[in-house]
Amino acid sequence: MAERPVSVVTGGAGFLGSHLCDKLIENGHKVICLDNLITGSLDNIAHLFGNENFKFIKYDVTEFIYVDGRVDNILHFASPASPIDYLKYPIQTLKVGSLGTHKALGLAKAKKARFLLASTSEVYGDPEIHPQPESYWGNVNPIGPRGVYDEAKRFAEAMTMAYHRYHGVDTRIVRIFNTYGPRMRLDDGRVLPTFVSQALKGEDLTVFGDGSQTRSFCYVDDLIEGIFRLLNTDYHDPVNIGNPDEITILEFAEEVLKHTNSKSKIIFKELPVDDPKVRQPDITLAKKLLGWEPKISRSEGIKITLNYFKQKLGLE
Image 1 (spheres, one colour):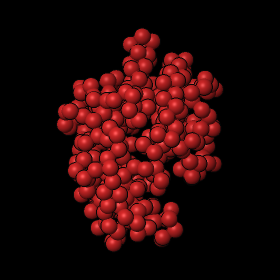
Image 2 (cartoon, one colour):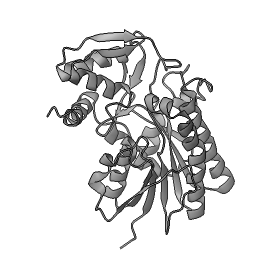
Image 3 (spheres, one colour):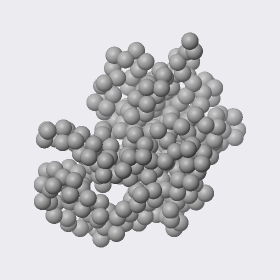
Image 4 (spheres, one colour):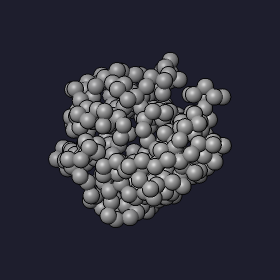
């Protein structure tokens, strides 16, 4: 029988990283999870402890990465990913996008491993093209508060392509759009957990601006399936993975109230600096290249996520 592929997941105790560890193990991989736990949580991977195909190492990937033995894939998911986190840890965010990417690519080069970078729709900034195709270069404020995340990921993409072109490393880049599902932190500041926790606690839902800005929400299982397919292709340029079903934030707040049967009110607050007005992936490439598109409706995904949050809040 063929040996199991060995995959290193940086940031593997995070929301997306932990789901990715599950997917890889389900598909016959051995997984080495590296995470310094500044925004990740052992709760997300606790169910994998004791699995002979899973190993967790508490580690800061901005330092030199040494992994013993064979490595076939490196999936670089380490980074704070919500505005609350990257505004709290601006320098760590820049370091993991630059130094962390450099160290992870160095490991891929040394091990002759395939490398997949978790990039983001934030590379498009506050877009002037809608929906956003991979060919769009973006509209980013490099010195604004969000620049620490946007520019870290843009640099990470540039570094990944340089290692591909100069060192011949076998690379992939996924641009991840808004994703939700179990294992999100209730306090991570992103719109879905914020609205859900406010609704369940009977607090007012805070909408920034007039709520006309749009987002497109992809359920985590759909996203992870797209990433897994991308890992197994031979395509090196960036690929958008997300759900093109666009909704305004105000409509989304109303949906959450309906799903939670909450009597909470919606209140409006000032729009944060450089907050994107629109966000919707053009997934033409993912459909063609990967035969992938999202399958789980927002209504279905919210129900599953809601149950998770209820358990977390002790409301079940």
